[in-house]
Length: 116
Image (cartoon, rainbow, N blue to C red; front, side):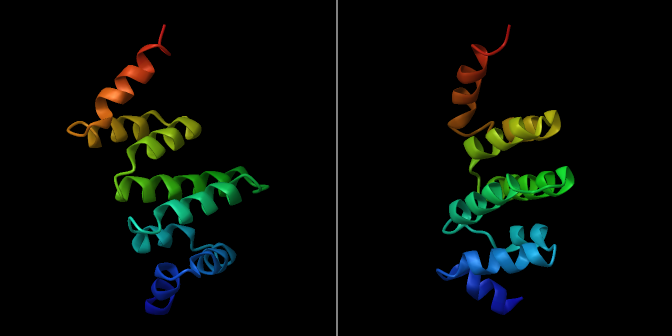
């Protein structure tokens, strides 16, 4: 795993992602994601999820990206994925995590117009 972390923290992170996807170890990526590489890793996971033929795989990769965003406190991206997953528990988790954050007011403002 030390070698895999070195690849993820280097510019070859996408190579690591490809090998992780091949061996079905996608959820392990959450351990190695940090603020420096979260955008690159999650963008790759979300893009790959669109090409999955199995709905379970698509959900797994999207959930992994959600966990990465939550770990690095990227709440706007996390709520976007929670909405895409149509998971009320995840949406609530984002709101609770962002309660003391500047994003909480933004979320309320954005969703106030969307609710009947």
